[in-house]
Image 1: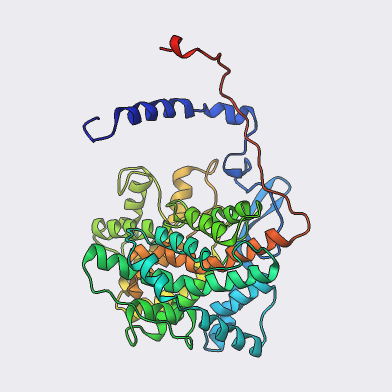
Image 2: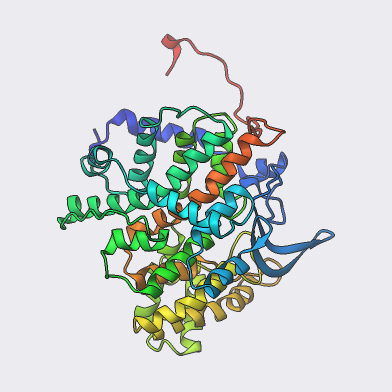
Length: 455
């Protein structure tokens, strides 16, 4: 044992593993490896086709990437139109988006009513399942509790291995409907066991939308405003899908391509989303903004804010990473349409919560950061950057009163609609093949040494 209580064999294996895992950077260039499935110009390597969603942030003119205003398109419909349509009719639109992503078309009034009624009937969890899987089994991370619960639902499904289209839809709707309940109950269970708070288990109301149901289960009846419900519904719409190339969606397509069951495939996507480089960015933004608020004396001073952002880029402030969290995206260049749509309602929410001054600091950073970043990097290496959706989503959730451990699970609660849609596509399109990229081995050959002769 060493001083930290780790067995010496573990320490020895760890040191050997790190040494054996080292690959010289120049080898990636030598063998033309597209690390992260990215081309040299930072675009994604084309590995598949989809009918579900499109993410547009640039256009190619020859070998040159030309920045354009960002677009997010679900089944051929601009997400901005989907959002505005729901707002104009004073209703929530996430349930409609679920229907669109799964079916490829918008429901008519009768279909939407029947769909929402059916989804409402699926939200409840069996009492024994709630007790055994969520309340009795402790968990310090809701994403892990969600994964465990999804795998637990496999045991309740008599047709768990059936991958026919009808059964896939049945499983998808059941999971989409139950995710908010599992997440809310997991949060309350975690608070009860680890923070000694009162355990509150509130039953979902089948007459409410997904967003309202979640706030009801999280905060209680009458404890949330209409604006809070509206902006949460908006956030769910904006996170429902983001094309086949984002890490968690690609993960579910990879696992689905093997023919595995729905619950295992969804669990793999949750595990991917849990990673801080994927699903935890809005928390990073909140922490960064707390630091900026502490160190910038005058929030309305462009010069003070600029100076501090430059310190961050120079790795002399905040966490020393040299990053401005929430600024920049793999695809979007001039603008992230999700950030634009969320920002509109975020301002109204900030007014309602008396946090307008703080919101305006966010807005100033959004306006200043792209040019500061460009000037700092230089025009030879800098690419066009903009605020992404994570820049405002954490602020929105914080204003609503949703705690940080729920941020990434909220992402999953929305993205499960897209995950299931991509799984359906992966299992039903005509040119199915198991996804298997190639890796080149660069470990030098070595002779086998008899045990008695090894040092």
